[in-house]
Length: 334
Image (cartoon, rainbow, N blue to C red; front, side, top):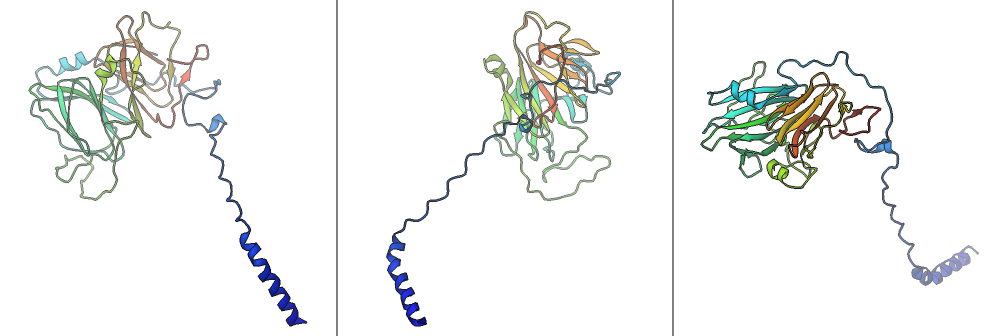
């Protein structure tokens, strides 16, 4: 019986083989549905698109004072006057937790050492004259008056006055950090630091948000808006356009304020009028630097009847989102 059963089972299996071979293969599993963005607004990226809500926010009393070189406004005319007759100079106008901002004049033929910063950008704007900037990976470019520059982290940059006139430019570097140098340079000594030869493999670069050079004057003369040339995890520098106004907003409109951070503007096109709590209304002309200190209300617009303005706004932590605290009795906005 055992052998017969084995024959029968084997015959059944062989007879079924053609049928089994003709059975269609099972259908491939359905593709996973496309990932749907979260509908929960708590999960959105940092920004100002969330629902309006009223909160309690701590504001210093008295307001954070301006200390050291920091003050509500630096007039470029006063800076130039204070250095009259000097061929080359540097004037520090900002020193915060994040930013070290200076105006610099280079005489014809001056060339600065090539340097870079490990994890932060160097950026600025040309007030007068023209300066040649050489950035790793970029074609050297001579930037005339009205151009902005953005040097990515870890990219060495060199600045040189190749013209016959002095060049004056504004430059921001990360506060409290010492630069690194290419091997070909001799580092400038810094007290408390020893420069040693090391190797790095890290690179820096540019993307849709960051460009090495930006013609601010051409941008201002156009009808374009929303221009951005620097935006990363540490800082941002937006080219904020202020449209022509016939009158300022009412003094009851204070704008907004930020916790634990300043907001800075270099006036790079037209005239900017900024209302800063405790300082009042300051009038910025081309090249002036305006500083809205920590936790101070501020509202920046074009000055009335002066046309369009552009302010190169500088704030930290923009990519992660920075809270704008608005008045409860006013619509959000600036």
